[in-house]
Image (cartoon, rainbow, N blue to C red):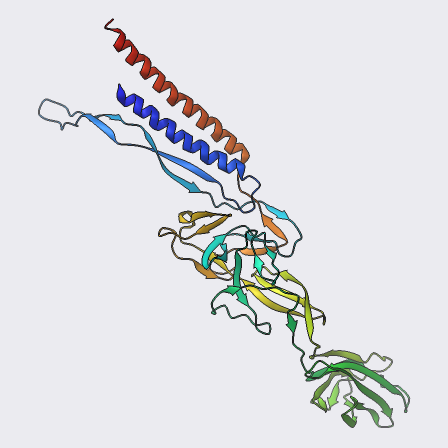
Length: 392
């Protein structure tokens, strides 16, 4: 008789735990990056009333007779299914599409999270809502070394892109072969020195009796008049190599010499002024591409993602963060889109993967299970009362 009482008590405890887990899931239905949990039950030890018997001559075998001693919670597992995406258009909001976790550091300890609602603190560091520092690799002149140790990522408006001296410049288009002698065309392109100082590079195309020639100046250096020759199809044949105007090699190889078209113009140059960071965007591989005031773009860092052999083995540490355990395996850190890691989406957040319809169903199941086990206790009590009443 007492067995049923204790079985009922174990059922109450187990279903109370199920209610706790379900209530926590519902409470976090709008928590960014939250992963729901589920409760798994298993029976406890069973008391043997009679052992199994082997078949013998003239007598058949008998099965064991056992009475169970109740139920217990075998485990509470986390469901890491992908949550729905919510568009925020906030550049510091990031979502992992696929497997993986953001790596963050707080108090010198590594944590992992799916919640990508980041922001920048006063020093430009990318942080979570409770101040954990987002980890990754910082770029040096636009180059990322993913073999280097992880660092705290900083995205500050004080970040600069260094100036770069112009070494090559190019012109394109057509010089009209039927232009009259004495025709001149002046074309300019802005070039830079190593400090980012701008200067004008001027080319003057002159049509003579023998054909076109080019001369130039950048205010300090000059290019002597150089003949331009074209073949019967209008393709430039000389000079075959870029012409030097001081430290700048001027490429004229795409200029043609056909009749009736005056389209020659500057094409490109490889120098730049210094610039400060204006904004940044997140690429699918986790790289942060900065847009600078000089009109150029450059990689300023890359977000690191971690995967685990057994993510269900991670321990929840609060704040939508997890820490490793002996059963999760070590973190395998790398770049997004590689090694089974998901890609990153900027300006979006991964919402909770809690399914309210399933959770409310679980509430009903847990409630009815609790009620049924409570009825076992009251029924056992009534039977005990009947036994006591046998002697009045």
